[in-house]
Image (cartoon, rainbow, N blue to C red; front, side, top):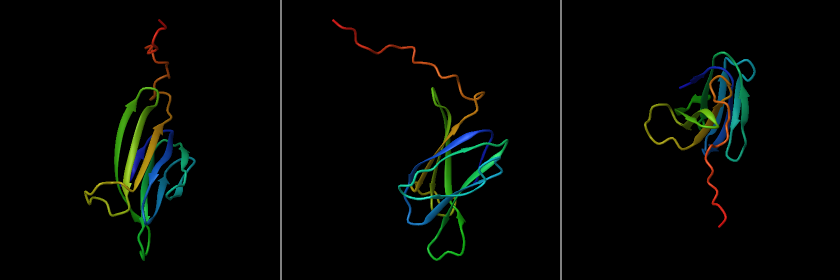
Length: 131
């Protein structure tokens, strides 16, 4: 299933581990539409902008006739200093099978300054004073 994003985001590949070929497809953006290959050991770091755009994963099964939509689950969180993050876990299989999603992990970081807080230093001092 495609995930919908609004505004500027950075997409980073954290993990890819599948026997099938995989790709990430971006549609509706201002600057990054297209398919991006995802492979074990390869780096992927893309900045995407646009009012509203979509991201989905696809896989190409052995002997398959075409790319098929992959199974994904998105989880969002807010971390101080990092801001709004969305982690997309995926697998090279049809959506909705319910099995663990271990083949793919993307981290999407919101780059919108109105959404993310102004970075601030930690107000607490954890140093041990000299005796």
